[in-house]
Amino acid sequence: MTQDVSASKADVDPSRRDRRSAAQPADLLPGDSASHGAVPADEHQEPRGLEPGVPPGGAYDAVVAAGHARLLPEEIRKDFPILDRLVHGKPLVYLDSANTSQKPRQVLEVMTDHYERHNANIARAVHQLGTEATEAYENARTKIAGFVTAPSRDEVIFTKNITEALNLVANTLASGLADDPRLRLGPGDEVVISEMEHHSNIVPWQLACRRTGARLRWFGLTDQGRLDLTDLESLINERTKLVSIAHQSNMLGTVNSLSPIVKRAREMGALVLVDGAQAVPHMSVNLSKLGVDLYAFTGHKMCGPTGIGVLWGRSELLDALPPFLGGGEMIETVTMAESTFAPVPHKFEAGTPPIAEAIGLGAAVDYLSAIDMHEIRAHEVALTAYALDGLATVPGLRVIGPVWTVNRGGTISFTMKGIHPHDVGQVLDELGIAVRVGHHCARPACLRYEVPATTRASFYLYNTLAEVDALIAGLRQVRKFFG
Ligand SMILES: Cc1ncc(COP(=O)(O)O)c(C=O)c1O
Image (tube, helix red, strand yellow):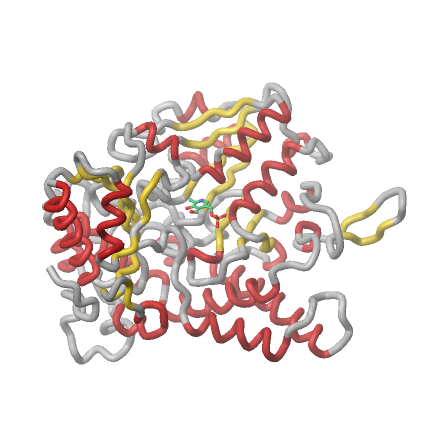
């Protein structure tokens, strides 16, 4: 175990100069299969050697044997100035990317350049700066549409975060203003979510149901941290208007297989909305193949700035939905008596939008694309396997969520017998290790597993195996300290 974050077991080949090791075609990984055109994106095919049943303790070797540790994080780390920081005199070990990711210099520079050279409001100025700012903002929309393979750039709506995107859908359905009855919630209708949702995919639906008289239902969870689909057919029925489900859980790390849900929802005529906050930053997501109706994500978890989120929806649906917020830029004409509205996406972008933030998110997707989402996913599978192996050796530690890398991301929640997560977090912080403690805005999942809170370590493209070593060493110290 070591605190040295610059060396890791994954970088054994000194001849590697690129951020990736010698090019080998990426095998199919969870969530990335659609871009290979083989099977739908959520038909997760795992790295060889990682079939269910690989026992904890053997996961990392299996990943490495399958050639899934190709990214060179110490090259990537050079792009992230904050990772050079000392915290309490120790090298920062940032294991809180599920909360918010760090930002590469490439994103910071694009945003600074925007403010220093091109700053103006968009879509309302005829001057040169206004034209440049508008072009950069709309260019970012095109890049982001490409990053998630959206069928059309006009289907990409900028919001301030995913919370606002999910509220946009809940509020427009609850408003009763849509002409199309599929898009109006009312008594007798049902909305289906799951017990692993983030509060931002629970509370808007509770409010919408309270407002309209619709009923909220949910999938339960298995003891292994998976969606329990046993009641799929009764939960999604002819009364279901919408199913809203996380692609990847922010607490359990579980990657949900969306296809059975999409299939059943289609049969019942229900819409499917996906919370992709923890998926889009970590895997290749192909919205042209996923088969869902609406999909949302948030910029700050994917190397972008805070203050920018995305709602994607099928254009036929977005056209039919009423506006969410009213104001400037979302209108076609306004009289004192009434207004007509701009075409999508502008219908949903009232007021001055987060211009620099959208441009920053455009730079973030350029950055991630240049590295390759398949490589990022593979790197995180390797880190997760290594961490699961290490955590299994810490006495009294219980992982809350899947204990294999199959259909799971690099977010690991755990408890330590007899020690409160806040104490765990505090000792780790003194060692320079940043993790999150608490209910992670997923309190129903905590209640399901009968834990008031957990400690959560989450990995991203810049994390190293040495940082995982530091975490495990830190946890041993926690155990020693609290007995
Ligand atoms: C799965 C999931 N959904 C939604 C959110 C909310 O994101 P934001 O606060 O950026 O709106 C988060 C943030 O942690 C999340 O992990």
